[in-house]
Amino acid sequence: MDKRSERIKEALREVAAEFLAREAGPQSLITVTDVSLSAEGRRGTIFITVLPETAEVAALAFANRNRSEFGAFFEKRVKGAMMPRIQFAIDEGQKASDRLDDIKL
Image (cartoon, rainbow, N blue to C red; front, side, top):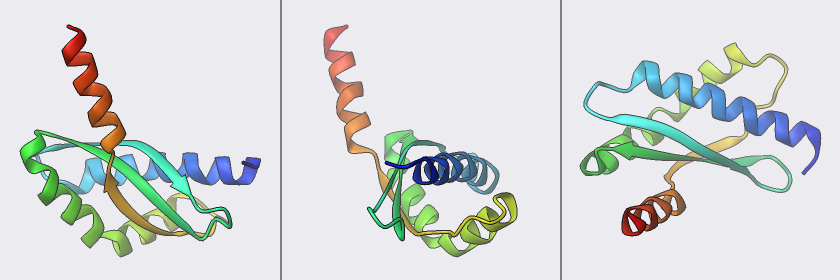
């Protein structure tokens, strides 16, 4: 991956974390764990984890419902970067890793 794509990924991760911390309610903790971009950089997925797990569906719906507000927030924070079309998704890999850690204990 080139430097530009890496910078966009890092900017998306940081700005998404700030946006979700500000806009999400106190009923759950939403953490941005990873960002993936398509090869051409036009589409992206922001992976999140949610605590408690019972609030995952509501938190994911909230994040995807507020994509346009996130886009406006991103454009204010990151000057000169083209905002890819994004979607939010639950980071299933992180959940599996956490389960393995629980088993080892």
